[in-house]
Amino acid sequence: MILTGGSPSTGSSLLVNILNRHPEIFAGSETYLFVHRELQQNWAKYKGRLLKTGKIKGLKSPAWFMFNGVLLDNPDYGWSRPELKKLITGSKTYDDFLRDFFAKPLHANGKSIWLEKSPANSYNFTFFGEQYPQAKLIQVARNPYDTAASLLRRGHDAWFAAGRCLFANARALSAAHLPGYYRLSYEGLTQNPARTVADLLDFLQLPTEVNLLEPSAAEREKVVQMPGWQHNEHGKIGRSSVGRFQKLKPAEQQLLRAAFSAFALNEKYVLNPDLRRAEQIFAALGYDYQPENHKPFKEQLHEMRAKDMLRRTVKLYPTGVGRYPGDIV
Image (cartoon, rainbow, N blue to C red; front, side):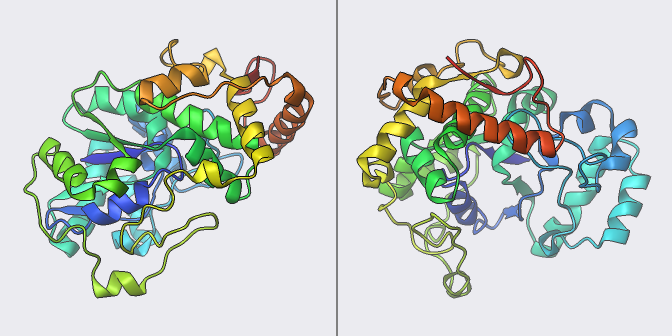
């Protein structure tokens, strides 16, 4: 079993499409199945809520990410909703469910290893890796400034972009002590893809396939490109997204730097106390941190924070005293 995770806009989709070309690896669409620790902790209690996505009965995702429930009836996996209900009811344990759920697409695609690609997997890397020491946990990392710049272009404000980036990276990095953890850089993937993919396959103990970097004709025709992306995730590897932050207007760059400088992860959600502030997370990832005096932006950042608190409240995510995920310091 392989999980990839990290912040959105780090190139995880590009990596997964490369790995999906390997004759042994199957990677379907995002399910968010591995975001929910409670399914592992008490399957009998929570399995009945697995397919619910409403605000009240849907399983809540942890910390910064907001998504209720899971998405299991995607055609990639070959299960209809009635079949899933029967499978869930008949699965006595979480392990039983995982085995049977992934057996179907593995058999249909002639593969032997499944990979799940939800970026929010990073929030549960540590717990999942401790419970399944044989699992491989791949963190896809990208310069946080470039990541946030991409999120900005996807319609998020500076506070949300900084928070989502920092939380995902902090949670993923907290699993770095586990033997199944591996960190891959977006810059390495785009600038030296052959070496980067070969090193990863070596870690996964899988043979290198010479054609993994070349998209098929069908993939070239399948354009998948979210707002803010500069490349088709099924197309050839491009380098133009490296240095994305530098392409922003100076005022946007300054505001993003201020958001990073002001942001502190709420201790309630921190797994490693040495990964609470931006400078600590940048250092752990190996990227240069650019401090910015955020005091001139405090009012603006507080407005963004209040907007996000309201959005979380409407979706019934915790925002009470001491429960909101990010503080301004």
